Amino acid sequence: MVYSNGIRDHALIQMNEDDSWQKPTRVTHDNWEVEACPEHGPAIAIDAKNRTHLAWFTLGDTRQGIFYAQTDDFGKIVSTPVTLGNIERLPSHADVIALDQRVVIVWKEFDGEQSSLHIKESHDRGISWLDKTTDLKSSSQNSHPKLVSNNKDIFLSWTSADKGHQIIKL
Image 1 (cartoon, helix red, strand yellow):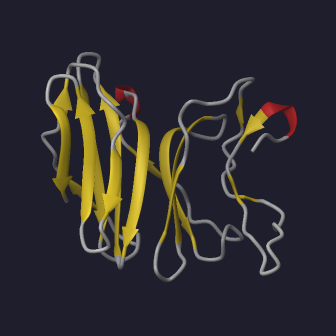
Image 2: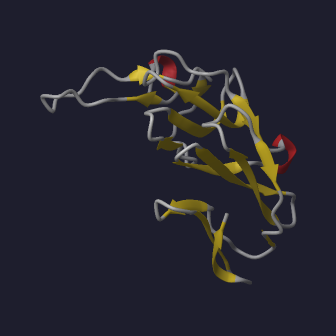
C-alpha cells in the first residue's frame, strides 16, 4: 500500500460474505519512503487454522532487510517482526509456505561473488524456528527461490544457469 508521503508498507485485505471488500489493515510499519514500486514483493501463507504468515523486504526508517511476522486475526495484532538473514549479505526475495503445523521460509543472500539459499523451519506454526542448512549456492545467474507443496510435502524450487532447475524436497 502507498500511505502518506509515499510510505510503502504492507496491508491485508479480506473479502466479506457479500463479496465486498473490507478496509485494508496495515500490518507493517517500516515507513519505507520511496517514489517507486519496490521490486521485492512480500510473501504470504495462511495455515489450516487461519494464522497468516508474512515475509517481506523493506528499506524503511524503522527497519531494513527481510522479516517474518504472523497474525491470527488478519492484522489487528501482528507479532514482533523477526529479522531474516545477514543484512551485510543483501538478504532478498523471501518466500513462505505453511502445511499443517509446519511453516518454512526461504530467502536468498549474496556475498559479492555468489548467491546462497537459507531456510528457517517451524513445526509449531511459527512459534519456534530451526535454521536449516543448505548447500544451494550459485555464482551464475539465478532465480528467486519458491516454495511449493503437494499438500503432503514441501518442496523448494530454484533455477540457476550453472545447475539448471532444481526441485528439492524439504
